[in-house]
Amino acid sequence: MPTWRAPGSGRGGVVNPSTAQATVIVDELVRNDVRHVVVCPGSRNAALAMAVHQAADEGRLTLHVRIDERSAGFLALGLSKASGRPAAVACTSGTAAANLHPAVLEAHHSGIGLLMITADRPPELHGTGANQTIDQRGLFGSAAVAVEFPVAERRAGQNQVWRGLVCRAVAQAETGRPVQVNVPFREPLVPTFEPRWPEPLAGRQDGLRWTTSAAPVTMAGSRVDFPLPARTLMVFGSGREDRARAAATVAASAGWPAVAEPTSRAAALSGGANVLRCGALLLAAGELPEPMRPAAVVVVGRPTLSRGVRGLMGRAPVYGIGDHPQWTDPQYVATHVRGWLDLDDMARVDGVDPEWSSAWRHADAAAVNAIEKLLGEQEWPTGLRLAMDVMESLPAGASLFLGSSNPVRDIDLVADPRSDVTIHANRGVAGIDGNVSTATGMALAGDGPAYALIGDLTLLHDLNGLLIGPPEQRPNLTLIVHNDDGGGIFTLLEQGAAEYKHSFERVFGTPHGADIEALCRGYRVDHVHAESSADLRTALAPGRGLKVVEVRSNRALLRDLHARLRAAVTEAALR
Image (cartoon, rainbow, N blue to C red; front, side, top):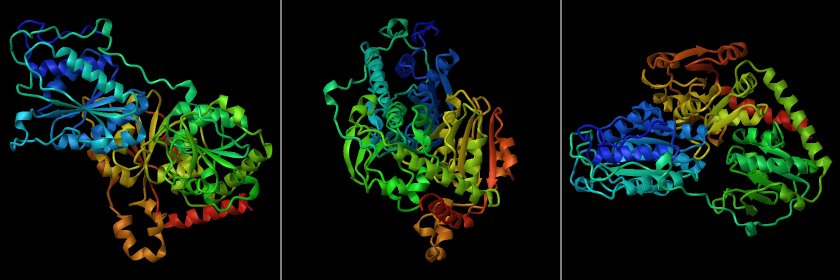
């Protein structure tokens, strides 16, 4: 790593308070292993932008520049997800900072560490009608930890304060929390010729953090014992991979079948769990026959996709494995909650029941045959068949981001689980906001080929995620856009029933008629229209750069197809 040069140490002492503070902040971020910083152009954050640019020139971090703060926030979120380290996004004051709020909420509810460095006006400008000035202190409320910086001044004793505050912010982000670092800057905002700075501004020797903190340790006496019946079904939702793998090892040893949402399938499979391909469909298809009725349900993480899973959790004792005291239990049915599950817990499993696992495996196999027969009879494409084809076509080692509406649910219902494909999705708040930008961050921070399966409204909602300037690093990302001209997911909900037909199309269906190919052309992004399964497989071959693969379908057929799918699974697997 190149040696950091304190501002003002060179010829002429080119440093002022804002420049000194910004340069120290960026240096300490690097020392705290913040590898990616997204910068949005602005005036009040000029000192930060220039300091980040210098650090990037020296090879100390990776700089990404975006002109849309909302997109930039989700790009940083995607970088954090894929890299496993908190990324930072820096912006100017006013509504620029407010545009980070959707990404902050998603990070908060997903447990993703994220740093928002919001430049602010100094205190004397607040309440005066000064341009681009709002109250940014604690702007994101309970969704983010707030770290407030003092205004930099030309005096000694500030270096350790600035560095210590950065360390506090990163330590909070490393626990999976978004952190707002609010920094008020006084003019001048760019380097100027000033007297030499009154104190050394270097950090610790050997590139160390100013303050190193350790994660809290779980006390050995805090374990909670509870009985684990042999006829237990394990449900994996989104959450920490280490906990999912540990719990999967227990499920494999106990012979428990597992229903795993897409974001947790790779971890569950790598832990040896018997992950059912059609678990969500089996639970949604009707009353379970007696040999398949669980005596208990162990929930790992945060399941959000399936009404069948939620219904199951109301009919059997539920054991939650989650973050205490913020455990997942929206129905208030959990009987026990703890923070982990590992092989030590096997002593509390009431034996192994081979017939229990066998009954679920046979039902799953029958359901697979039923869906493949039904979907094979449909004209290509449907969203369900697209989900199957995408999962089958991805190369080993790929990363796949799933849009928050039908794509993640289609994968959940019918796609064959794969341990060699890493799946990401914004399941914290489950909105479509920022999905393109999050997928871009995932691709930029990852190693292998990257893909995203999203809907047309999801693309249009974050179209500026395609706006990447010529100097910027472009992701190797293929966006598969399922275009059914509107909100297909609402077709499957209550408002999609025939009796609400009069109001449905305008206020829920929301057809847009957008020409996606023309939009891609305007953003200088390659576009391919896949008209067959073979076209899709060809388009998904690993390549360089950013590409959109558009697949068009008719959402008017969606509700009937899903009804027939549930009926086919019920007939084949549950009777």
